[in-house]
Length: 350
Ligand SMILES: Cc1cc2nc3c(=O)[nH]c(=O)nc-3n(C[C@H](O)[C@H](O)[C@H](O)COP(=O)(O)O)c2cc1C
Image (tube, rainbow, N blue to C red; front, side, top):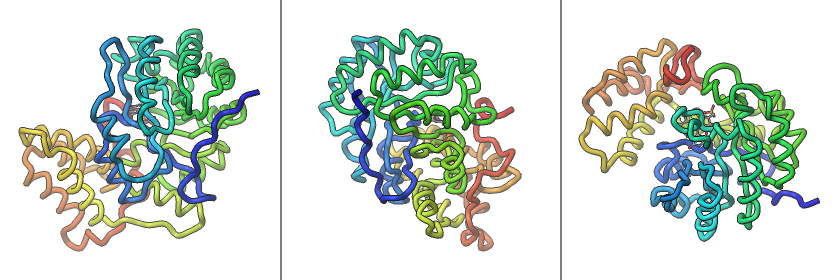
């Protein structure tokens, strides 16, 4: 029986492999380069590239593949359902130095799943099979899948895992929630364990891997090959280094609040240089700060104040108040997000 193509080796033999979760409008070239400096993940996944009749290879995605400068492999993620166009874009992408093509079967945004793409595909195993057949045939390197355990429940989960084996998928990243759960509620790590037992390829456990300790716990609970981290890499861009060090039994790096303040300034300088007016640049920053703020104070006051900041002086003044003044810059940054401090109330809130 044909077997999956092994993944490239992780950076440090013996460490727990890590992957940066694909995140739209976050995991771009600038963010990948920043992780390159703070502690690189073993594997990158690009933001999703929308596949439809008029799709082309978007410059921002190609830039992130070509210029991240970290030597770590990059998987290019596609979202779509049209067989002809998926094949067309997959063939074009293979002209570039990618580690593989990844198919998005998890996006929970209603405007996405209503088009039967992303998480919407999880309702239709027959359609999944058609897509797997086409992509498997045209991907000469790795073809990987990122998915959730189901749409509203896990009724097709085992059937889809069978398809993962049948079409020799090379790696599975599994977010242990349904599409309907969005980002709320518990992550079902037991389903991730079951997937790992059933499929022939490596499995990345995804969902609420919030710290190095949690990564080791998830590894032990699920037996996964590695962990994929999304939102916690925005909050704490040192997390991949920390997981690597902790998994090798080394005391891991602990950033201070001063380091976090510098991280925010770095984001300001690299992410939105071309964005005008300034208020739009601040809005873009807030998408990151929403997650960073989960580690700043247990009462969420920093976040409340930040959400009201309109001008740049205000924005950095609040940062200094919570992260620099009165010797705070030397305090250690929390390793875990504070319970009850919610980044995006409409997606993660109760
Ligand atoms: C802002 C944002 C954008 C995302 N964009 C994508 C995407 O482009 N493709 C994808 O497969 N998942 C996307 N996701 C889902 C993440 O990859 C990941 O599965 C999810 O956040 C759970 O992992 P976490 O708990 O470590 O954040 C996105 C998540 C967030 C928060």
